[in-house]
Amino acid sequence: MTDAIWSALVDPHRRAVLDLLRVRDRAVGELVEALGQSQPNVSKHLRVLRDAGLVRVTKQAQQRVYAMEPGPMAELDAWLEPYRRLWNDRLDTLGRYLDADADSSADHAEEPS
Image (cartoon, rainbow, N blue to C red; front, side):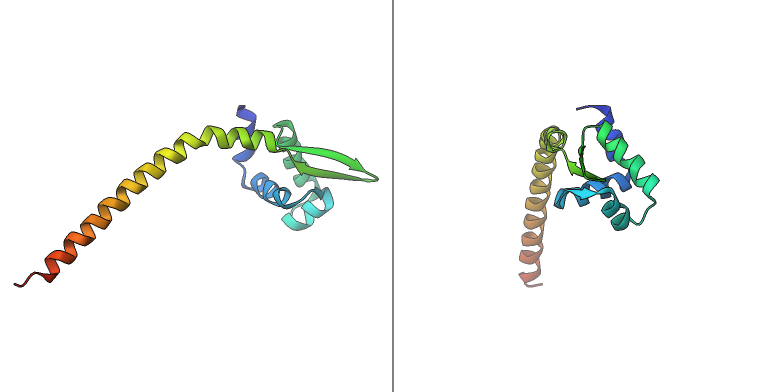
C-alpha cells in the first residue's frame, strides 16, 4: 500500500467522491453537482484519487466518467484487518467485564440490608 493512498484518503472531499463512486460510476458534472463544489476543485480531487490508483476514468463522448478502482481499497482493507480483530477482541473483553459487573451489581441490590 502506497503513501499516495493514505494521502488521498485523508481529505474528506476525496472520501465523499469515493462514497459517490462506490454506488455507481459518475461523470464529472454529476460529481460537481452532488458535492456542491466547483468543477476545478472536483477535478483536482479526482486527479489525486486517480494518481493514487483509487479511481479510473473513461471517456464517453464528451464526458469523462469516473469509477472506483477496487484493488487499492481491498489492499487497505487487508492491512486494516488485524487492527479490526485487535479492537473487536478488546471490545468483547470490555463487554464481558461490563456484563459481569452489571450481574454483580444486580446480585448486591437483591441482598437484604
